[in-house]
Image (cartoon, rainbow, N blue to C red; front, top):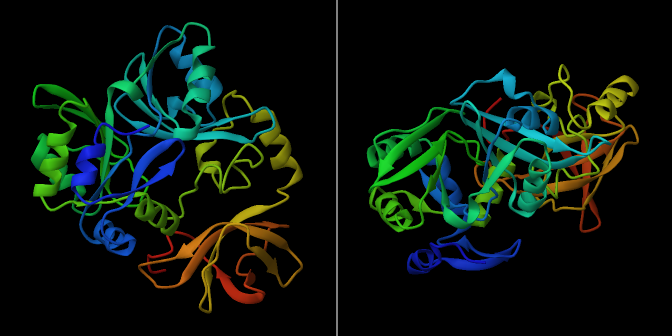
Length: 348
């Protein structure tokens, strides 16, 4: 599959790769240049491959509460919420952003690989109406310290953090939310494909750098944001992944009982952040050990372009004590590392 903006990306010099059945830009310039543009000014990503559907009907509100770990009643219409769909064992089927558009209407944004699965689960709930938006819209993420000011200049309005806004762009409606996957301020803008090229042209004219999947991954790792399929999946729980802020135990949802049992019995493992103390690049699957005998593996790892050190996330069992040192095996050498709380690039 290709985004409606494929030819636009090609004209901007994109190099493409296959990802989840889509042909997507992996980079235009260098990954490091794109990464630093987002950290220092602004960049944009075509994330049209991501899932998105509208949920309405008399059963919509109850479905959101029953199927998702966070409680939508913690927020109100006009806001967004990070949440997760769990299986009965507490494993993460997907991590999701929900836009509460207005009373009775929700926009659900799953990961690309899980779009059909999540949409089917909501379709099966009584009294729900699901409208797939992926075939009829484009999703552009504008990220960085200057992102919201650029979006406001182009669209006349920009959303605040985890808030929703709407604008008219060339006679069509643009919905947007103050969300993203980089750890920076910004907006994810949902547009009609007919006007998406003009929006990208306006971004480029404003000096916003086009960015690909390579920079998106280094940015999200540097911010400590989990990647479904790497750091979380159906065998890991939100508690093990340190995502308990997106779990509201005071309401009933699929997987709640399993999480309660884990809370009562203690965590068998924990996802921890680390920074290498010596040169090296940690990669997915590399072995990890602690001085007290804990073992585990790296789930995500790379060089941080902002601090020029190897960083990563790793599950360790049993969970290491706070401040306990780690070692990561890289090419038959055990490289010392220190535990670090993301975002890795911000001074502590």
